Image (cartoon, rainbow, N blue to C red; front, side, top):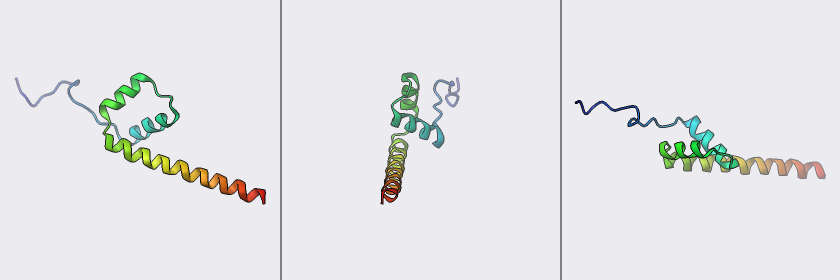
Length: 76
């Protein structure tokens, strides 16, 4: 038997950037299916999750700042 061949179960396909972004986005809302969450936990690199999570948190804060500035500007 050849050791270079792997069965489809043994080959792990790492999710793309967009798939990781989608997983983190759903995680922000807290509406992830358990099955999908377990699949993401097995295949996603923790480094990608941390970086994307920090980027999304920064975007969220920036959106809040812009909305607060717009609201405060319209009150004056």
